[in-house]
Amino acid sequence: MSGGPRLTIAQTDELGAERMAELTDLCEAAFEEPFAPIWERVGPGIHVIADLGGRAVGHAMVVDRTLHIGTDAPVTLDTGYVENVATAPDRHGEGLGSAVMAEVGRIIGQAFALGALATGSPAFYTRLGWETWAGPTWVRMPDGQRVRSAEQDGNIMVLRTPTTPPTLDLGAPIAVDWRPGEAW
Image (tube, rainbow, N blue to C red; front, side, top):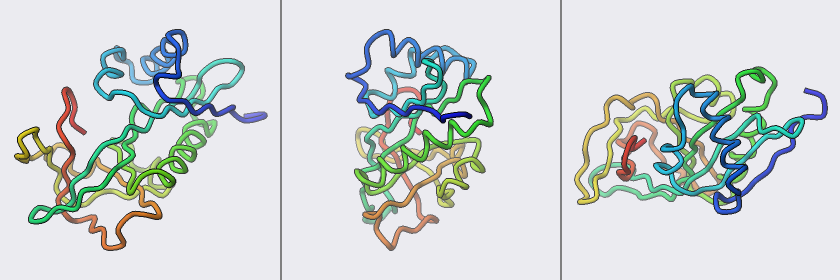
């Protein structure tokens, strides 16, 4: 990758319609599914975009979410939740995803008590300092009730930050606030 990617950081509302369309195309190519509804589900956030040759070839975004750790007296953490990590299919293996995620990690480390994401590809994130959550996963409904999300057990990863509680127990139950579509 000669010269490396140019990384751009922008809030969702700073991205125009043309740039959002470009990111939609990138994510649709990477995930092989329609993507417009997913932007609505995850809401606004901070986008990290890798550009090469005037084209978006890598992307991830950080959205503000709350995680609840434990059950009896849960610890509530302001979390930088990572969404829509995508690399153009013709650019895999060039370090674009790693470059984007390094910047995402820097953003999370400066602004949040914890980073989190859901993935089926843990090896990629492990080498970047992310840890697999070992405890059971839950979704916290609007009324405060918790609903088990066992299908996500082993798929949630976290990134510690300078403000992560030192007593964080990766084996404790973890819950995310409900949202339409996929909670995690």
